[in-house]
Image (cartoon, rainbow, N blue to C red; front, side):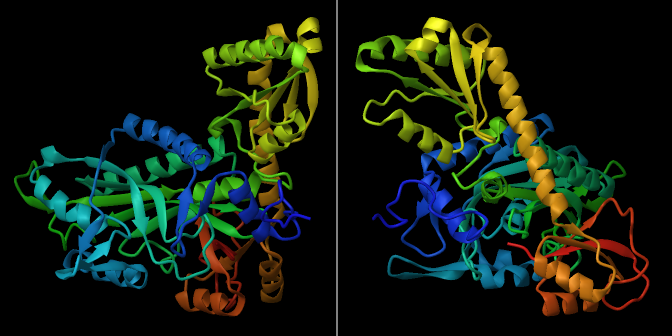
Length: 482
Protein backbone atom coordinates (compact mmCIF):
# COMPACT_ATOMS: atom_id res chain seq x y z
CA UNK A 1 0.00 0.00 0.00
CA UNK A 2 1.35 3.44 -0.89
CA UNK A 3 1.98 6.04 1.81
CA UNK A 4 -0.08 9.27 1.82
CA UNK A 5 2.98 11.04 0.38
CA UNK A 6 2.98 8.70 -2.62
CA UNK A 7 -0.76 8.18 -2.91
CA UNK A 8 -2.59 9.88 -5.73
CA UNK A 9 -5.32 12.17 -4.47
CA UNK A 10 -6.09 13.65 -1.06
CA UNK A 11 -6.00 10.99 1.65
CA UNK A 12 -7.50 12.88 4.61
CA UNK A 13 -10.85 14.60 5.08
CA UNK A 14 -10.98 18.37 5.41
CA UNK A 15 -13.29 18.05 8.42
CA UNK A 16 -11.04 15.56 10.24
CA UNK A 17 -7.47 16.88 9.84
CA UNK A 18 -7.64 20.37 8.38
CA UNK A 19 -3.90 21.07 8.59
CA UNK A 20 -2.83 17.84 6.87
CA UNK A 21 -5.60 18.24 4.29
CA UNK A 22 -4.36 21.76 3.48
CA UNK A 23 -0.73 20.63 3.10
CA UNK A 24 -1.72 17.76 0.81
CA UNK A 25 -3.78 20.10 -1.41
CA UNK A 26 -0.88 22.54 -1.74
CA UNK A 27 1.60 19.79 -2.64
CA UNK A 28 -0.58 17.41 -4.68
CA UNK A 29 -2.41 20.05 -6.70
CA UNK A 30 1.02 21.29 -7.79
CA UNK A 31 0.77 24.77 -6.26
CA UNK A 32 4.01 24.81 -4.25
CA UNK A 33 6.72 22.69 -2.69
CA UNK A 34 8.98 23.06 0.31
CA UNK A 35 12.35 24.78 -0.17
CA UNK A 36 15.60 23.54 1.45
CA UNK A 37 15.45 26.36 4.05
CA UNK A 38 12.79 26.11 6.78
CA UNK A 39 9.95 28.59 6.35
CA UNK A 40 10.46 29.06 2.60
CA UNK A 41 8.47 27.57 -0.28
CA UNK A 42 8.96 27.13 -4.01
CA UNK A 43 6.02 28.38 -6.07
CA UNK A 44 5.25 25.94 -8.88
CA UNK A 45 3.84 27.13 -12.23
CA UNK A 46 0.21 26.31 -11.34
CA UNK A 47 0.47 28.22 -8.06
CA UNK A 48 2.21 31.08 -9.83
CA UNK A 49 -0.54 31.18 -12.45
CA UNK A 50 -3.12 31.81 -9.69
CA UNK A 51 -0.88 34.57 -8.31
CA UNK A 52 -0.66 36.05 -11.82
CA UNK A 53 -4.48 36.15 -12.01
CA UNK A 54 -4.58 38.07 -8.72
CA UNK A 55 -1.68 40.30 -9.73
CA UNK A 56 -3.11 41.15 -13.15
CA UNK A 57 -6.49 42.12 -11.67
CA UNK A 58 -4.92 44.37 -9.03
CA UNK A 59 -2.37 45.84 -11.42
CA UNK A 60 -5.12 46.91 -13.78
CA UNK A 61 -7.13 48.51 -10.95
CA UNK A 62 -4.09 50.32 -9.53
CA UNK A 63 -3.25 51.79 -12.91
CA UNK A 64 -6.88 52.87 -13.42
CA UNK A 65 -6.65 54.79 -10.12
CA UNK A 66 -3.45 56.59 -11.07
CA UNK A 67 -0.75 54.41 -9.49
CA UNK A 68 2.53 53.51 -11.18
CA UNK A 69 4.79 50.53 -10.59
CA UNK A 70 8.39 50.89 -9.44
CA UNK A 71 11.18 48.68 -8.13
CA UNK A 72 13.12 48.78 -4.86
CA UNK A 73 16.26 46.89 -3.80
CA UNK A 74 15.96 44.19 -1.16
CA UNK A 75 18.63 45.53 1.25
CA UNK A 76 17.90 48.31 3.74
CA UNK A 77 20.61 49.90 5.95
CA UNK A 78 19.93 49.53 9.68
CA UNK A 79 20.10 53.32 10.17
CA UNK A 80 17.16 53.77 7.77
CA UNK A 81 15.09 50.96 9.28
CA UNK A 82 15.46 52.48 12.75
CA UNK A 83 14.51 56.02 11.74
CA UNK A 84 10.87 55.54 12.75
CA UNK A 85 11.33 54.01 16.21
CA UNK A 86 7.96 52.27 16.74
CA UNK A 87 8.11 50.80 13.24
CA UNK A 88 11.66 49.49 13.82
CA UNK A 89 10.78 47.98 17.21
CA UNK A 90 7.78 46.23 15.68
CA UNK A 91 9.81 44.48 13.01
CA UNK A 92 13.12 43.80 14.83
CA UNK A 93 12.31 40.19 15.89
CA UNK A 94 11.52 39.21 12.29
CA UNK A 95 14.40 40.87 10.42
CA UNK A 96 17.01 38.87 8.53
CA UNK A 97 20.37 40.72 8.67
CA UNK A 98 23.19 40.65 6.12
CA UNK A 99 26.56 41.21 7.81
CA UNK A 100 29.03 39.77 5.28
CA UNK A 101 29.74 40.03 1.57
CA UNK A 102 31.98 37.10 0.73
CA UNK A 103 34.48 36.96 3.60
CA UNK A 104 34.31 40.69 4.37
CA UNK A 105 32.13 42.52 6.87
CA UNK A 106 29.71 44.85 5.12
CA UNK A 107 30.09 47.57 7.74
CA UNK A 108 26.61 48.81 8.65
CA UNK A 109 24.19 45.90 9.01
CA UNK A 110 21.77 45.50 6.11
CA UNK A 111 18.22 44.24 6.59
CA UNK A 112 16.52 42.02 4.04
CA UNK A 113 13.34 43.99 3.33
CA UNK A 114 10.60 43.13 5.87
CA UNK A 115 8.55 45.96 4.30
CA UNK A 116 9.69 48.99 2.32
CA UNK A 117 8.40 52.10 4.11
CA UNK A 118 11.76 53.31 5.38
CA UNK A 119 13.63 52.67 2.15
CA UNK A 120 10.94 54.17 -0.07
CA UNK A 121 10.50 57.24 2.11
CA UNK A 122 14.19 58.09 2.22
CA UNK A 123 13.97 58.22 -1.60
CA UNK A 124 10.61 60.05 -1.68
CA UNK A 125 12.18 62.87 0.38
CA UNK A 126 14.53 63.52 -2.57
CA UNK A 127 11.77 63.43 -5.17
CA UNK A 128 9.25 65.71 -3.49
CA UNK A 129 9.91 69.44 -3.15
CA UNK A 130 6.71 71.16 -4.28
CA UNK A 131 2.94 70.65 -4.23
CA UNK A 132 3.35 70.02 -7.97
CA UNK A 133 5.07 66.70 -7.14
CA UNK A 134 1.95 65.45 -5.33
CA UNK A 135 0.22 63.11 -5.10
CA UNK A 136 2.93 60.49 -5.53
CA UNK A 137 1.32 57.06 -5.96
CA UNK A 138 3.69 54.12 -6.39
CA UNK A 139 3.19 50.37 -6.11
CA UNK A 140 5.89 47.71 -5.85
CA UNK A 141 5.43 44.06 -6.84
CA UNK A 142 8.12 42.30 -4.85
CA UNK A 143 8.77 39.88 -2.02
CA UNK A 144 9.21 40.59 1.67
CA UNK A 145 11.28 38.58 4.13
CA UNK A 146 10.34 38.11 7.76
CA UNK A 147 11.83 35.38 9.94
CA UNK A 148 8.69 33.39 10.73
CA UNK A 149 8.69 32.69 14.43
CA UNK A 150 5.30 30.96 14.58
CA UNK A 151 4.46 27.66 12.91
CA UNK A 152 4.88 27.95 9.15
CA UNK A 153 2.12 27.17 6.64
CA UNK A 154 2.55 27.45 2.86
CA UNK A 155 1.08 30.73 1.53
CA UNK A 156 -0.25 31.70 4.97
CA UNK A 157 2.90 31.96 7.09
CA UNK A 158 6.24 31.80 5.30
CA UNK A 159 9.53 33.63 5.82
CA UNK A 160 9.43 35.05 2.31
CA UNK A 161 6.23 35.93 0.51
CA UNK A 162 5.14 37.52 -2.73
CA UNK A 163 3.06 40.64 -2.34
CA UNK A 164 2.38 44.12 -3.57
CA UNK A 165 3.02 47.12 -1.37
CA UNK A 166 1.67 50.51 -2.32
CA UNK A 167 3.08 53.78 -0.97
CA UNK A 168 1.48 57.14 -1.57
CA UNK A 169 2.23 60.73 -0.55
CA UNK A 170 -0.43 63.47 -0.37
CA UNK A 171 -0.75 67.18 0.34
CA UNK A 172 -3.60 66.77 2.85
CA UNK A 173 -4.81 64.33 5.50
CA UNK A 174 -8.17 64.15 3.72
CA UNK A 175 -6.57 63.01 0.44
CA UNK A 176 -4.60 60.33 2.30
CA UNK A 177 -7.74 59.11 4.08
CA UNK A 178 -9.57 58.92 0.76
CA UNK A 179 -6.69 56.87 -0.68
CA UNK A 180 -6.87 54.40 2.23
CA UNK A 181 -10.55 53.74 1.49
CA UNK A 182 -10.11 53.61 -2.30
CA UNK A 183 -7.54 50.83 -1.90
CA UNK A 184 -9.60 48.96 0.68
CA UNK A 185 -12.47 48.95 -1.81
CA UNK A 186 -10.21 47.60 -4.59
CA UNK A 187 -9.15 44.83 -2.20
CA UNK A 188 -12.77 44.10 -1.31
CA UNK A 189 -13.63 43.80 -5.00
CA UNK A 190 -10.78 41.33 -5.56
CA UNK A 191 -11.50 39.23 -2.46
CA UNK A 192 -15.29 39.07 -2.70
CA UNK A 193 -16.06 39.42 -6.42
CA UNK A 194 -13.13 37.39 -7.75
CA UNK A 195 -11.89 35.09 -4.97
CA UNK A 196 -15.49 34.57 -3.76
CA UNK A 197 -14.55 35.02 -0.09
CA UNK A 198 -16.78 37.33 1.99
CA UNK A 199 -14.75 39.73 4.12
CA UNK A 200 -15.52 42.04 7.04
CA UNK A 201 -14.23 45.58 6.62
CA UNK A 202 -13.15 47.72 9.50
CA UNK A 203 -10.33 49.06 11.64
CA UNK A 204 -7.59 47.28 13.56
CA UNK A 205 -7.21 48.11 17.24
CA UNK A 206 -4.18 50.22 18.20
CA UNK A 207 -2.52 47.04 19.48
CA UNK A 208 -3.04 45.25 16.16
CA UNK A 209 -2.49 48.14 13.72
CA UNK A 210 0.57 48.45 11.48
CA UNK A 211 3.51 49.75 13.51
CA UNK A 212 3.96 53.44 12.74
CA UNK A 213 0.43 53.97 11.37
CA UNK A 214 -2.20 56.41 12.62
CA UNK A 215 -4.73 53.68 11.92
CA UNK A 216 -5.05 50.48 9.90
CA UNK A 217 -8.09 49.35 7.93
CA UNK A 218 -8.47 45.65 7.25
CA UNK A 219 -10.43 42.96 5.46
CA UNK A 220 -10.87 39.87 7.65
CA UNK A 221 -12.01 36.53 6.29
CA UNK A 222 -13.14 33.37 8.05
CA UNK A 223 -11.56 30.07 7.09
CA UNK A 224 -13.41 26.74 7.08
CA UNK A 225 -11.76 25.64 10.36
CA UNK A 226 -13.05 28.64 12.31
CA UNK A 227 -9.82 30.63 12.26
CA UNK A 228 -9.72 34.21 10.98
CA UNK A 229 -7.34 35.39 8.28
CA UNK A 230 -6.25 38.98 7.65
CA UNK A 231 -6.60 39.24 3.90
CA UNK A 232 -5.56 42.81 3.13
CA UNK A 233 -4.66 46.01 4.97
CA UNK A 234 -4.60 49.69 4.07
CA UNK A 235 -2.85 52.08 6.47
CA UNK A 236 -3.15 55.81 7.10
CA UNK A 237 0.37 56.79 8.14
CA UNK A 238 -0.43 60.43 8.93
CA UNK A 239 2.85 62.35 9.20
CA UNK A 240 4.52 59.66 11.32
CA UNK A 241 7.03 58.89 8.56
CA UNK A 242 7.13 62.19 6.70
CA UNK A 243 8.56 63.98 9.77
CA UNK A 244 11.52 61.66 10.54
CA UNK A 245 12.22 61.25 6.79
CA UNK A 246 11.64 64.94 6.03
CA UNK A 247 9.15 64.43 3.22
CA UNK A 248 8.17 68.07 2.82
CA UNK A 249 6.71 70.17 0.06
CA UNK A 250 6.41 73.85 -0.71
CA UNK A 251 2.68 74.61 -0.82
CA UNK A 252 0.75 77.08 -2.94
CA UNK A 253 0.96 79.34 0.13
CA UNK A 254 4.80 79.36 -0.32
CA UNK A 255 5.16 77.66 3.09
CA UNK A 256 6.79 74.31 3.76
CA UNK A 257 4.50 71.45 4.87
CA UNK A 258 5.05 67.86 5.91
CA UNK A 259 3.24 65.44 3.59
CA UNK A 260 0.58 62.85 4.52
CA UNK A 261 1.10 59.22 3.60
CA UNK A 262 -0.50 55.80 3.14
CA UNK A 263 0.76 52.28 2.61
CA UNK A 264 -1.17 49.12 1.78
CA UNK A 265 -0.68 45.54 0.65
CA UNK A 266 -1.97 42.04 -0.03
CA UNK A 267 0.14 38.92 -0.34
CA UNK A 268 -0.07 35.39 -1.67
CA UNK A 269 -1.85 34.43 1.56
CA UNK A 270 -4.94 35.13 -0.57
CA UNK A 271 -4.13 31.84 -2.31
CA UNK A 272 -4.13 30.19 1.13
CA UNK A 273 -7.57 31.68 1.81
CA UNK A 274 -8.89 30.41 -1.51
CA UNK A 275 -7.69 26.87 -0.67
CA UNK A 276 -9.04 26.86 2.90
CA UNK A 277 -12.44 28.34 2.11
CA UNK A 278 -13.35 26.58 -1.15
CA UNK A 279 -11.42 23.30 -1.21
CA UNK A 280 -13.06 19.94 -0.47
CA UNK A 281 -12.04 16.34 0.13
CA UNK A 282 -11.13 15.96 -3.55
CA UNK A 283 -8.76 18.96 -3.50
CA UNK A 284 -8.87 22.54 -4.73
CA UNK A 285 -11.86 24.42 -6.10
CA UNK A 286 -10.80 27.63 -7.83
CA UNK A 287 -13.35 30.38 -8.44
CA UNK A 288 -13.74 30.76 -12.23
CA UNK A 289 -12.79 34.44 -12.30
CA UNK A 290 -9.24 33.69 -11.06
CA UNK A 291 -8.81 30.13 -12.34
CA UNK A 292 -5.77 29.75 -14.66
CA UNK A 293 -7.78 27.07 -16.50
CA UNK A 294 -11.53 27.73 -16.42
CA UNK A 295 -12.54 24.76 -18.57
CA UNK A 296 -10.72 21.49 -19.18
CA UNK A 297 -11.82 19.41 -22.17
CA UNK A 298 -11.28 15.66 -21.91
CA UNK A 299 -11.59 13.67 -25.17
CA UNK A 300 -12.84 10.12 -24.48
CA UNK A 301 -12.18 7.70 -27.31
CA UNK A 302 -11.15 4.28 -28.55
CA UNK A 303 -8.16 4.07 -30.89
CA UNK A 304 -10.27 4.17 -34.06
CA UNK A 305 -12.01 7.41 -32.98
CA UNK A 306 -8.93 9.16 -31.58
CA UNK A 307 -8.28 11.58 -34.42
CA UNK A 308 -11.96 12.56 -34.75
CA UNK A 309 -12.52 13.15 -31.00
CA UNK A 310 -9.21 14.92 -30.41
CA UNK A 311 -9.83 17.14 -33.43
CA UNK A 312 -13.29 18.11 -32.14
CA UNK A 313 -11.87 18.78 -28.64
CA UNK A 314 -9.29 21.15 -30.15
CA UNK A 315 -12.06 22.93 -32.10
CA UNK A 316 -14.08 23.40 -28.91
CA UNK A 317 -11.06 24.78 -27.06
CA UNK A 318 -10.41 27.21 -29.89
CA UNK A 319 -14.00 28.45 -29.85
CA UNK A 320 -13.87 28.99 -26.09
CA UNK A 321 -10.53 30.79 -26.26
CA UNK A 322 -11.89 33.12 -28.96
CA UNK A 323 -14.68 34.02 -26.51
CA UNK A 324 -12.09 34.89 -23.84
CA UNK A 325 -12.53 31.69 -21.83
CA UNK A 326 -9.37 30.02 -20.53
CA UNK A 327 -9.65 26.48 -21.91
CA UNK A 328 -7.27 23.50 -22.01
CA UNK A 329 -7.48 20.15 -23.81
CA UNK A 330 -6.09 17.15 -21.93
CA UNK A 331 -5.35 14.81 -24.83
CA UNK A 332 -2.59 12.80 -23.12
CA UNK A 333 -2.78 9.18 -24.25
CA UNK A 334 -0.74 7.81 -21.36
CA UNK A 335 -3.53 8.42 -18.82
CA UNK A 336 -7.09 7.06 -18.62
CA UNK A 337 -9.99 9.48 -18.71
CA UNK A 338 -10.84 8.51 -15.11
CA UNK A 339 -7.33 9.44 -13.96
CA UNK A 340 -7.65 12.78 -15.77
CA UNK A 341 -11.02 13.49 -14.14
CA UNK A 342 -9.47 12.99 -10.70
CA UNK A 343 -6.41 15.10 -11.47
CA UNK A 344 -8.41 18.07 -12.76
CA UNK A 345 -10.78 17.77 -9.82
CA UNK A 346 -7.78 17.95 -7.48
CA UNK A 347 -6.48 21.00 -9.36
CA UNK A 348 -9.85 22.66 -8.87
CA UNK A 349 -10.71 23.53 -12.48
CA UNK A 350 -14.27 24.93 -12.27
CA UNK A 351 -15.74 23.19 -15.32
CA UNK A 352 -15.00 20.05 -17.31
CA UNK A 353 -16.29 19.13 -20.76
CA UNK A 354 -16.30 15.46 -21.68
CA UNK A 355 -16.56 14.56 -25.36
CA UNK A 356 -16.71 11.22 -27.14
CA UNK A 357 -17.57 9.95 -30.64
CA UNK A 358 -21.24 9.41 -29.74
CA UNK A 359 -21.49 12.99 -28.40
CA UNK A 360 -20.12 14.31 -31.69
CA UNK A 361 -22.76 12.31 -33.58
CA UNK A 362 -25.54 13.76 -31.41
CA UNK A 363 -24.08 17.28 -31.42
CA UNK A 364 -23.96 17.40 -27.60
CA UNK A 365 -21.34 17.87 -24.89
CA UNK A 366 -21.28 16.74 -21.28
CA UNK A 367 -20.54 19.55 -18.79
CA UNK A 368 -19.41 18.72 -15.24
CA UNK A 369 -19.27 21.39 -12.53
CA UNK A 370 -16.42 21.11 -10.01
CA UNK A 371 -18.26 22.70 -7.09
CA UNK A 372 -21.18 20.26 -6.88
CA UNK A 373 -20.19 17.68 -9.53
CA UNK A 374 -23.47 18.18 -11.40
CA UNK A 375 -23.44 16.72 -14.90
CA UNK A 376 -25.58 18.01 -17.76
CA UNK A 377 -25.71 17.57 -21.51
CA UNK A 378 -26.04 20.64 -23.71
CA UNK A 379 -26.07 21.24 -27.44
CA UNK A 380 -22.64 21.93 -28.84
CA UNK A 381 -24.07 24.85 -30.81
CA UNK A 382 -24.64 26.67 -27.49
CA UNK A 383 -21.10 26.00 -26.25
CA UNK A 384 -20.02 29.55 -25.33
CA UNK A 385 -23.34 30.62 -23.80
CA UNK A 386 -23.65 27.47 -21.71
CA UNK A 387 -20.01 27.69 -20.58
CA UNK A 388 -20.34 31.32 -19.51
CA UNK A 389 -23.60 30.58 -17.73
CA UNK A 390 -22.16 27.63 -15.81
CA UNK A 391 -18.97 29.49 -14.87
CA UNK A 392 -21.12 32.33 -13.52
CA UNK A 393 -23.17 29.86 -11.48
CA UNK A 394 -20.05 28.21 -10.02
CA UNK A 395 -18.64 31.63 -9.06
CA UNK A 396 -21.91 32.63 -7.37
CA UNK A 397 -22.33 29.30 -5.57
CA UNK A 398 -18.78 29.40 -4.18
CA UNK A 399 -19.45 32.85 -2.73
CA UNK A 400 -22.75 31.68 -1.23
CA UNK A 401 -21.05 28.63 0.31
CA UNK A 402 -18.32 30.84 1.78
CA UNK A 403 -20.96 33.23 3.14
CA UNK A 404 -22.62 30.23 4.84
CA UNK A 405 -19.27 29.33 6.44
CA UNK A 406 -18.84 32.91 7.71
CA UNK A 407 -22.41 33.14 9.04
CA UNK A 408 -22.03 29.76 10.76
CA UNK A 409 -18.97 31.05 12.58
CA UNK A 410 -20.58 34.28 13.84
CA UNK A 411 -21.74 34.53 17.43
CA UNK A 412 -22.86 37.33 19.77
CA UNK A 413 -22.10 36.11 23.29
CA UNK A 414 -23.71 38.07 26.13
CA UNK A 415 -21.54 36.89 29.04
CA UNK A 416 -17.80 36.37 29.33
CA UNK A 417 -18.35 32.63 29.90
CA UNK A 418 -20.37 32.47 26.67
CA UNK A 419 -17.61 34.48 24.99
CA UNK A 420 -14.91 31.98 26.05
CA UNK A 421 -17.05 29.07 24.83
CA UNK A 422 -17.60 30.84 21.48
CA UNK A 423 -13.87 31.41 21.03
CA UNK A 424 -13.17 27.73 21.79
CA UNK A 425 -15.74 26.72 19.18
CA UNK A 426 -14.05 28.93 16.56
CA UNK A 427 -15.16 31.85 14.48
CA UNK A 428 -15.87 35.50 15.21
CA UNK A 429 -17.31 36.48 18.58
CA UNK A 430 -18.92 39.90 18.20
CA UNK A 431 -18.79 41.71 21.54
CA UNK A 432 -18.73 45.10 23.18
CA UNK A 433 -15.36 46.62 24.04
CA UNK A 434 -14.59 49.61 26.25
CA UNK A 435 -11.47 50.33 24.07
CA UNK A 436 -9.09 49.82 27.03
CA UNK A 437 -6.01 47.93 25.88
CA UNK A 438 -5.89 46.24 29.28
CA UNK A 439 -9.15 44.37 28.50
CA UNK A 440 -7.88 43.47 25.01
CA UNK A 441 -4.64 42.05 26.45
CA UNK A 442 -6.41 40.09 29.19
CA UNK A 443 -8.82 38.56 26.68
CA UNK A 444 -5.85 37.55 24.50
CA UNK A 445 -4.05 36.09 27.51
CA UNK A 446 -7.08 34.13 28.75
CA UNK A 447 -8.58 32.94 25.44
CA UNK A 448 -5.92 33.29 22.70
CA UNK A 449 -8.29 35.59 20.79
CA UNK A 450 -7.35 38.97 19.28
CA UNK A 451 -9.56 41.78 18.13
CA UNK A 452 -9.56 40.85 14.46
CA UNK A 453 -11.60 43.83 13.26
CA UNK A 454 -13.64 46.75 14.59
CA UNK A 455 -16.26 46.77 11.83
CA UNK A 456 -17.21 49.99 10.05
CA UNK A 457 -20.81 48.89 10.56
CA UNK A 458 -21.32 49.33 14.31
CA UNK A 459 -24.99 48.34 14.20
CA UNK A 460 -25.98 46.20 17.17
CA UNK A 461 -23.16 47.44 19.41
CA UNK A 462 -23.68 45.97 22.91
CA UNK A 463 -24.01 48.32 25.89
CA UNK A 464 -21.22 46.77 27.95
CA UNK A 465 -17.61 45.64 27.47
CA UNK A 466 -17.56 41.84 27.40
CA UNK A 467 -14.59 41.75 29.79
CA UNK A 468 -14.89 44.54 32.37
CA UNK A 469 -18.58 45.40 32.13
CA UNK A 470 -17.89 49.13 31.65
CA UNK A 471 -19.86 50.97 28.92
CA UNK A 472 -18.86 49.68 25.47
CA UNK A 473 -17.50 52.23 23.03
CA UNK A 474 -17.04 49.82 20.13
CA UNK A 475 -18.41 46.60 18.70
CA UNK A 476 -15.36 44.38 18.05
CA UNK A 477 -14.99 40.98 16.38
CA UNK A 478 -12.71 38.71 18.38
CA UNK A 479 -11.21 35.45 17.13
CA UNK A 480 -8.19 33.20 16.89
CA UNK A 481 -6.31 33.68 13.68
CA UNK A 482 -3.59 32.43 11.38
